[in-house]
Amino acid sequence: MLKGLALTPPVIGRIAIGRVVEKAGRRLPEKDDEFTLTSQVQNKEGWVLHPVDAQLRKEPGAKLRSIPVRLLFDDPDLSLRANYTMFDRATGRPLCVGDGESCKRVTLSGMQSLPCPSPAVCALAQDGNCKPYGRLHVRVEAEGNTEPGLAGDELGSFVFRTTGFNSIRTLSARLRYLFAVSGGLLAGLPLELRLRGKSTTLSHRTPIYYVDLTLRAGSSLAQVVALARQEREQQAALGLDQAALDEAARQGLALGEFEESEEEGVEVVEEFYPDSDTDGDSGAAQAPAPISLRGKLHRKQEALGMRANATGDPGASHAVA
Image (tube, rainbow, N blue to C red):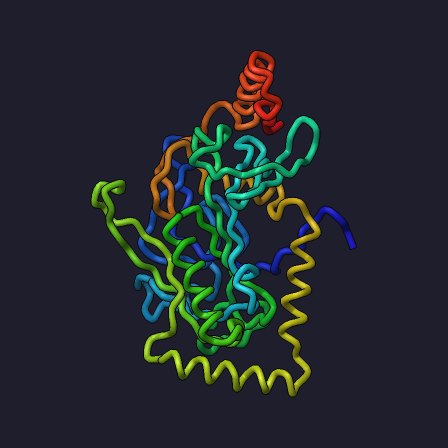
């Protein structure tokens, strides 16, 4: 098995509430007020729609604001991976990934484990280059879907990516509550991704949209937990081992320093790391900075190095390469 390559859940499609559009020769992120399910293929017009997108819309052109889903894993931290993340804007390479206590950072001395003070008080994150970055993996259940490789792929997932604090906080809370109340049977619960809107002072009273994870309409908590327990007993009788699946996913994720490749990182930076952003899950339409993040960090490192020489503070010289 290759070392240094994180094995992430297999992805067969994307779930988005925004898009990247071309304006005046620049590719810019744009908000939306509905879900869109796409394949992993892009053309000149953008991401190609996944066939499941049309299956989920009751009528052509109808707004898609809820998606029936199930989770692949019982462990909430396997279904939703969330970290403070800094990318090189020019290459898409992850440079620093932390959890608010510790981080893995690419430095001039190589990969290092360092304290993570969170972006609010981190000297390297003051330009907005470091954000909460979450990836939620779900199985999408579409009625009447029998085609191999579509939403019926029981080990394939659709990924919802976000840098929105509202989505990350809400999804994290929901997963932990559902895990606790179901006795750890998250993978057996029939759930629904739901798009919600809110206004804040920071959004200038305009709606910002975020994603919630709820029970499906018409279901009670007692009903879905009872159903999950029944299905888990049936799976065990058939030899299906959910605990072993969770452990295999956990070990696969631990193989690499970072989960995103440079190829994926370029797409993430373009869509979620514009120069200026809002607290929603789609960024303001701003062009990327002309100077790469790596260049900015080198300049910061020079400044921090000068400070370390002047003050004798060895900790001031830690910076990203």
